[in-house]
Image 1: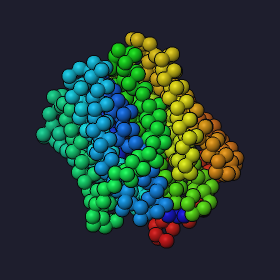
Image 2: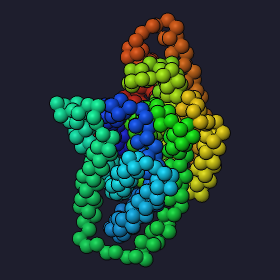
Image 3: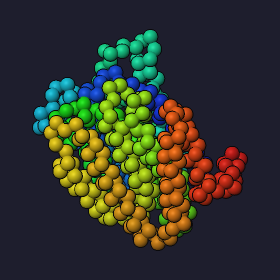
Image 4: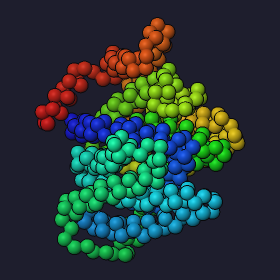
Length: 488
């Protein structure tokens, strides 16, 4: 099981390592530098509104379907057409609620049009994610890996031509074009994923059963509530930041730092989580031991996340200066605090997914509801109008919220699943964190290198420490790599 898991992880990371950095740093960052922090901040606020109401599109159908299909693949034939029809109805409801919210909030005509485009983008993306959830549930992780980057490849080709070739239109670039290109890219990828799903299960006829749709929706309500709470506490920051600050540029600067956290999440936790849900669901159904896979995930993700957070503390300001225009001193501090969220995100991707696969939704909903309350109260308490430090406070509030969620998910996972707490691994991770901080202190004190060489040395030193403290053993790693290359 570990060999197959590592093979799939290696493939997923490889394809995303090739594509996602190009998208986030080459396209998304360039768009922000082109249109400016203020306009991009408004875009990001509308984007987060669209995401928060995204739960209406999903309504827990993806998680429910993935869990059911993973445990019984033949169920896909009956679920696929009925869920696709249910999602069409939810799409109309979502569009009405999202645009209605924008109207009631007095969103201007430019922002309202942007909200409409972003809402359409979320509808198409929701269908793509649903079709991908079926592909992953059938354990076709490499195929799902290809679909995880297909939309970005399409968008990179189109936007790259606009931004970097002789067709470039420079400062006249319209932020709405950015949204429309993504709508097109998601649409093409969704059509391809739908075609594959129909081929995989050979659906010769479509049988619509309204009673079955209602049963599916009813069983999906707990998943919907969970996803909604998670969307709120993870995405409400930028919305509240712009609303309370009365300054879209602050939200834009926050988004610039958050983009780097998004890079890390998309390169590791998001990919792992999408693969772990059907994997955990099948292992639980077959009563297989989960401890080895859970600890392997922690071993892979946590040292990487700690390295990112520590580097952001020592080099955050330099990284922001390197990537963006019009950078202020506080932007580096915001980046550091957001990167401190990364280890907690990684923990959640493992343990929240484990609880979801095990059906412990009441626990997850309770944790997420408390996280929403905590995050909103913190933001209301510490954010104030026209405060230049609002971005820093929002990042700190996000970090505290994620820390609470991560620790709660871990505690309940070990309690409910009967897993043995890996004290030796925990001590090794803590030792690694202390030594990696010490390494960076020494580098800053004695080596006055420029950004790129210092980052390379820090990464190399971190990898060396991972082996030195025994988090990963060289002999075991070489054996696993050999098995992956041989495909055994």
